[in-house]
Amino acid sequence: MSRPEYDIIVVGGGHAGSEAAAAAARMGARTLLITMSLEAIGRMSCNPAIGGIGKGQIAREIDALGGLMGLATDESGLQFRMLNRSKGPAVWSPRAQCDRFMYAAAVRRMLEAEPNLFMRSDMAVDLLTEGDRVAGVVTQLGVEIRSKAIILTSGTFMNGQIHIGDKSYGGGRMGEGASKGLTGALHRLGFESGRLKTGTPPRLDGRTIDYVRLEEQKGDLEPSPFSYMTDRLPEKQLSCWITFTDPSVHDILRTGFDRSPMFVGRIQGTGPRYCPSIEDKIDRFADKDRHQIFLEPEGWNTHEVYVNGFSTSLPEEVQMAAIRRVPGLEEVHMLRPGYAIEYDYFPPYQLRYSLETKHVRGLFFAGQINGTTGYEEAGAQGLIAGANAASYVQEREQLVLKRSEAYIGVLIDDLVAKGTDEPYRMFTSRAEHRMMLRQDNADERLTEIGHSAGLVSEERLRRMERRRDARQQLLDAVRITSITPEEVNPYLQTLESAPVKQTDRIAKVALRPEVSLGELLRSTGTQHLIPEVEGLERVEEMVEIDLKYEGYVDRERGLIEKMEQLESMPLPDGLDYHAIHNITMEAREKLGRIRPENLGQASRISGVSPSDVSVLMVMVKSGRMPRLADAG
Ligand SMILES: Cc1cc2nc3c(=O)[nH]c(=O)nc-3n(C[C@H](O)[C@H](O)[C@H](O)COP(=O)(O)OP(=O)(O)OC[C@H]3O[C@@H](n4cnc5c(N)ncnc54)[C@H](O)[C@@H]3O)c2cc1C
Picture (spheres, protein in one colour):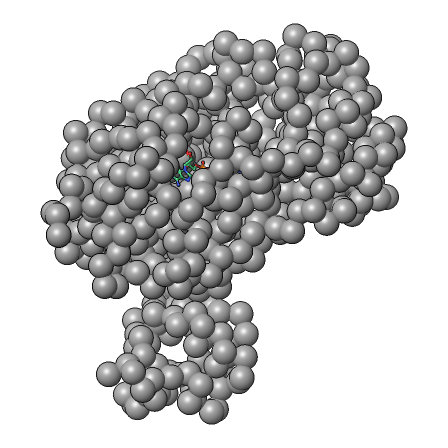
């Protein structure tokens, strides 16, 4: 048998594949990235936007772990906004509209800078195995390439089928072919697969939009970067624009319903519930007479505009007629129609927490192949799969993040513990510890972990430490420094906040919800307390969050400790759940199928009740657990 040429092969150069390849190579694994087209590396299939609610936190976590996404976003961003500012900091979520071409170019450049990373333009069509281990891939050119581990990140490409009205053809994304062969190979290895669906809106020629009729949405005046390493963001930003549909638009769209691939049942796959197509919105919310549409630029040097909120797979002429009834779009030229795409995915309960498959050692899955949707969800899984494939090859400890440590931990735990039968995207509501998992503290939560795993550079680690020290320094300073009524009352008056009667600590005044710590320090002449740090982060903003939310954070810490007790109780692989008679039938069936790694995971499986968990806990503690006959 020939020696493996590579430690790791990553199949697919999308968001999961790029992060996976970069992570594996950075950890010292000789890595080959095989992707159908090198020109499409880092391509954004849908809107060129990174972040948003729940997703912005993930993008910052990827960055804190040394990933590519934050850096590529800062380099290519053309509008930056912090969403949810009017709500609590737990749900503040950064979002950036990017230049599609610059983003992909930045990802490609960063990959090419990795000395251990090699690329090949080709399609993987089959897998080689030896015993229970993966051993390489076969490509469509008939070439066998051997490796010790493989990461599959095929996105929407596996048996992809594109639909526009009554037209349908094979493709992985508009203008790119479908990936064939791998689904069959995986079925032969014992994997189950399913079909999912997603969709995208039409793209318009910006020169034909009447912007005078639209509402302008500008970027933030003081934009926040995605990467903790960014010192400067582009000064200039582009605006997005808002318009609305009306009943006449809906009437036109309804004329195409009898040719809608979704409504006539030609699309079998389940679509994203929270991101419905415009025809779905009209059908499901028939009483709403208008829907918001955001017109978002796709780049600095193109007129192409993305029509956010108008995803559709209705016939092209119906799309065109309807869109021309939208205010501001009466004369619009459509560059390409919206479409829907169906593709194969592999229900993620077939994975371990490391994202290695349970069936085949050394085989990892990441991204849309696991039933997720979104660049951030894909990138996060890619990074973890890349790190763990490298650890597998190097026989090192696996990198598994807890739900209390990161949104990435929540994402992977949800996938592995519960599986998904519809496209999974992140929301802040999925994270029970969201008060701890904020976008501002991702580096403090994760950079040391990434450094120990070999993902994070010394420079990044030092930068995090300096920021963390600066934060603590300011926190200590405002807790001991006092301000007099004469110093603070003029500022409080501007806020119509009650004046203070005696000298008080800055930290105490800052607890008032209407008070901004930064403004308080500046208006009382105490801004010298703010330490200087590199980058664009505002230390005073982070300290304000620390002060105002201290009580909540302490309470959450208590809950986390309780949950960690369950996580530390392992459930053996060969446990025979069907022989445990005092748990429910549903629990037996689900536990037997998902085979959780510990009691914490078992407790999060829907259908497993607290009393089922108590029974399992007694068994784990007593060490008396029924084993499957072949479990040894
Ligand atoms: C039409 C459409 C609409 C979408 N709408 C949304 C949306 O509204 N919201 C949202 O959050 N996300 C949306 N997405 C999803 C988003 O694009 C994906 O979640 C994200 O790109 C997934 O990243 P990935 O790395 O898993 O896969 P992808 O970005 O799809 O990349 C897969 C890569 O793998 C390569 N590849 C596949 N098979 C092989 C093979 N056998 N051999 C070699 N290379 C292979 C492909 O060439 C491609 O480069 C949409 C995607 C599409 C196509």
